[in-house]
Image (cartoon, rainbow, N blue to C red; front, side, top):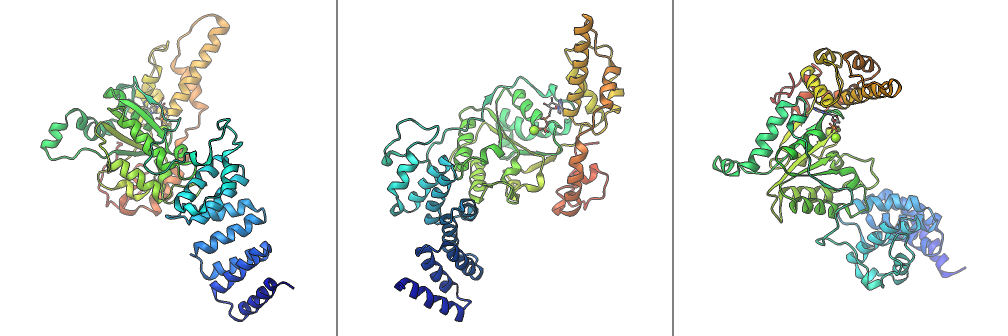
Amino acid sequence: MSSNEDVIRALQAAVAATPDSAPLHKHLADLLLASGDYVEAAKSYRRALDLAPDDNGIKTALAEAYFRQNKVDVALVILEELLRGPQPPAPALLLAARAYLAAGEHATAVRVYGHAIAADPTLADEDLARRLTGGAPGTTATPPPENELVFVTAGEEAAPPPSSDVERPQLTFKDVGGMEKLKDEIRMKIIHPLTHPEIYRAYGKTLGGGILMYGPPGCGKTHLARATAGEVNAHFLAVGLHDVLDMYLGQSEHNLHAIFELARANTPCVLFFDEVDALGASRSDMRYSAGRQVINQFLSELDGVNTSNEGVLVLAATNAPWHLDAALRRPGRFDRVIFVPPPDVEARAAILQILLAGKPTDKIDYGRLARQTEDFSGADLRGAVDMAVENKLREAMRTGVVAPVRTTDLLDVIKTIHPTTKEWFATARNYAIYSNQSGLYDDILAYLKLPGNGSGGRKGLFG
Ligand SMILES: Nc1ncnc2c1ncn2[C@@H]1O[C@H](COP(=O)(O)OP(=O)(O)O)[C@@H](O)[C@H]1O
Ligand SMILES: [Mg+2]
């Protein structure tokens, strides 16, 4: 019997006598791990963790016990929780790099390894570094020597993510049906401060801050944001935040910074954040959900902490306002949070006119079509028009005659379409009734004709 086994035996007796000492369990577990008994080690770490649930050292060690058993996924679940924290321990980062490598997530492994040795240079592991730099799929053929490895660290310029393309939209407000109050709000808050900054300053109005739109999908949020850019002849940069934040761990902040820099380099620019709920503190369905650092990075970019945001107009949208982080609503940020309802009857008529403009039509009874399309979103209307036009096209191919689209063609199609906004309201209704703090969802309640708590005192955008 080796002396190690003696010590383990002695410790097991001690643990049995003093079962509520976390350090004792951990000590025993460390020895079990060192002696190669990973299964028993994991059990002891678990007990230690029950007694000291916030101990990051024990969590890291537990992850290692699983990693040694080749339970890489289990190890990663524990490690990713640690990595999301404000200051992940360097040994956890190092172990995570190994685990990502084992899981085949090479690029993430490289990045996390970079963070590990940045946090604690003594952890540098030549062997691991060699495995990380060599033979990576999709990287350059000749791996750089270890000391030339380029890790993205805070403050460095990161390349903008490929999804962000700066556009110059031709659309203007004329191409947006209805939404009059929202257009007005955008004029006052976004457009006029840009075109007449001196007047705003004269009234002591500070510039900056953005508008956040929420509501059912397909009701023109993105469309209006794009038209806002066209309206002032500005560039348009649309960013789907889920894409940005879903990228590699630790990369989100750099991506965000790069996006803002791209907008600042292309002023005037409407910077549109879609799915801004991805920044929400209450999201748990993302593997690398946005941590506090990402939200803080977003806020400081928005506030223009280290630089000027002059000429950058910020709009944002979400279909899931209940996931939003409250910090986004503070003054100077998205202090206008606006409900975008499905188009009302006049708006539907206007949208149909816009959609059919330039197409061969008979005299169309827009009023009738609008009345027949209650609960339709703009996107639903677009679907109906597309379908009617397609039917006509098919007919024209068969007969060789280009016949105009008639009201009845559209009515036929409309009957077959199920409006998509109802589903959204089924969810929104619950939030509006049960978590309507400070009257946040009064507009939804009013739309549904349900009593609100009235504390918001804001008027809805409809009716
Ligand atoms: N008010 C509107 N005026 C004209 N077209 C609209 C309007 N609302 C929606 N649409 C049409 O529906 C499509 C989808 O709308 P979109 O702006 O993407 O919705 P959201 O961003 O709210 O989910 C748009 O591309 C546009 O063709
Ligand atoms: Mg959209």
